[in-house]
Image: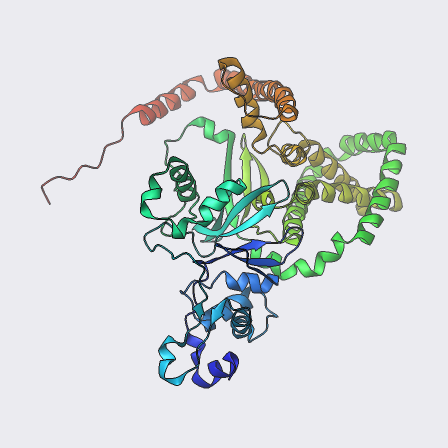
Length: 503
């Protein structure tokens, strides 16, 4: 009797699927969506499809066959109704699980492990069930946790938190052996350091991401803050298949050809374009402000969707979208941190997708402007769309501010945390500490730090002087009163909650 027939006859859809994480680990195949199930101890490994790999994440002895089937069909609406049963049969055929169909031992008939030589230590730290490894082409491993926790968004209560940990092959080998390590080895300094990193990123069972420390408000927080809105990933997953043609080679060739002709046309007409803008502003200045703002919002929205769909194209997760404010000026953001798990070229495409969308919109608007009749609504609207696209491109491409230009520079150079590492480079240089950077990275960091510092001082220094000048001229008394109230609030010690004997 097959497992499928047995489950049907005995109504074992409420079986708890076994915990594979004790002896097996999931690894994503390089340049592919396929998944490898690999033995923690030994050389055994088996290839599974993306949907099977997704399903295997729930084999943790916490979910039943029915529950895992529901999870899979929610993520993949066209999934086989017998996906989990067939997957169990496949695991048994590979001798990953063992199944005993004897009637008298039915309670023990839940699939069992074919165990490796080592025995797991139940008291040792263990990785969470949803955590899995990804190999990066630059010869390091990323431990990815797509279920680290949740936080509240403005429009959606629960937005998932993704955490990552980049480690060397040697550190990976240590982490893979956590479940079998004797307690006495936990005191090893290297292992303790890795456990601290695993705890901070909520990779271990029983750990949660650290909550942001609540600090008192300071006016400096107005320079940069984010407002998380919602989790777009389910919607993106539902629609990505309709847009995969956009990432095909024929479409890329057509798009490059179209953009090349558009750039040549734009360069040829640049004087006429500038003149048209002067005429529009001279005759319709006030009436153009609202349409320009709305078109800019459209450009920004499509820009962010370009990032999001590109990340989904390569199998990533987009956990949130929202607004960010820089000096109270609004903008939008898409959480694409999952792109750090991709190859460098894929990551460049994800970061550059937003700029490419804007360039394409500007090119389409240019042709519409040329083909429409002067003076009608389409002629004016297409011109405003072209200017809105070019204006936001100019802002986004600045590598000295943390917009797309910065993250594109990070992706191209492969230097994560470029700004912080650039400043740390000079800090180590001036204090005589060892610099753990390659020669090539050192040159990039040495050039980037002074440019970034000059930009920060110029922009924020200019804003500070202008705001201070306006305040002193217009509301000096009110500003002084507000400053005094804030100083009392900020420096007055917060009462500590001390338990008293009176109740």
